Length: 318
Image (cartoon, rainbow, N blue to C red; front, side, top):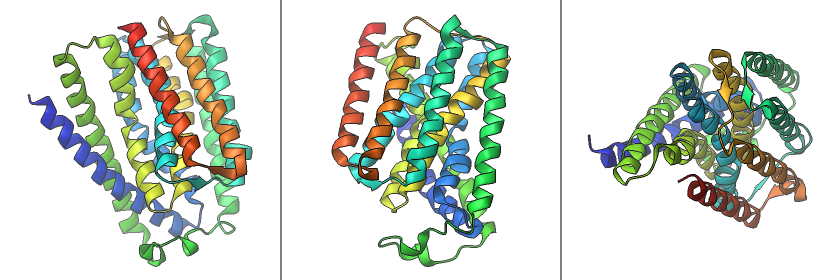
């Protein structure tokens, strides 16, 4: 198998899927009359978290808890450090007040819960049940809020420079476009992970390093692709909603399902990863609170912090 060609094909399909997903999700939000942030927080976040779910269920069934743990925590670190960092570096964007006052604090609370449950060095089935109950509560509150505010938060009337924002796409083609985009990002991420892993093995990298870096980064590619396309099209709320929602989904739903199948042990160095995830999550709040805007220099700091941590972590485990 030519892993280089697999990697290239995966990236191409991933980019095309990201374009379709943002177009479809934006059109769905217009038709439903809800905020693009809510769509990003739920529909898009769930779809782009599917690679993590697939990888973790497979790893849990095979008893490889190192991959399960590393994929969830590594993806959450990448979502903030890499994705928000790159997104803000590409184009500074405004963060709405409710994201700062409600959604990011929810993500911080979920992160704190994950750390508390990990204090005994494992996520058992009881821990998984707690995470899943919290996930159901999160979905209920988010859906109720969206339905309550659906008539108060129409959004694309003033989208800058987007002629297509003023065109109405009916819900049926919008749904098909969203599903096609999801299929593209999922298939593309799968090919990308396979190709990148093959290339890494051929270069002599250890499986531990591959799991810590390539698998976590590869399963975060849908979030990265979707967020970059969203910001390019003036849909910053969809981008940050996608990241915040994905982090909540990863910890509550994916880790909950995985530990429900089989206990997930915290591997050597895992607590350092949990602390790093918490630091990145906490840092995002004051950045977003500052003039309710994520500036390019703040994106650069997030990205630099992510690259520095990953370089150190890779060297320390190789």
